[in-house]
Image (cartoon, rainbow, N blue to C red; front, side, top):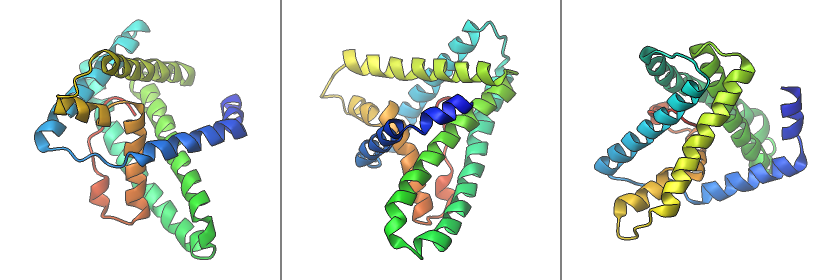
Length: 209
């Protein structure tokens, strides 16, 4: 864990993260119809579940169906609670820092965004460990394996399946993948920063970040 923290302290890693977050945020939120949203969410949920299931099976872990269901529930409920905590933290930062030194808004927002995203990673790994009775390193390995498999499948599909005439495919390219996933977190952060209704933070997340 100490080595991982030192790795993240590298200026090159920090600058890369900021650049990636800024690039992902340029896309902005994607507006979809109800039918498109339901179809894409069904694809996302199914694909992310299969990647997690196959990754767990590769470790020769016998997981029951209720464990997968519990993980999905607690991942969604737990993350909503964390967003409420972050909302409170931002209120404190806004009162103690931003109001006194408005020029620090950009710096504080960038670092706040990084903290939120990495908290999501740590929460996901912790929930894997608790749900499937794994140690920290086992859960971390499972996390990277399942996430890498999911995003690799998405990348491969979009690489070989190209149909500009398909509105659904274009919507999938804008909502599935690594940058859209990061953008979803940035959208949540924007809701926190703009002090929107907390009910807007409620969403159903699939089996990936």
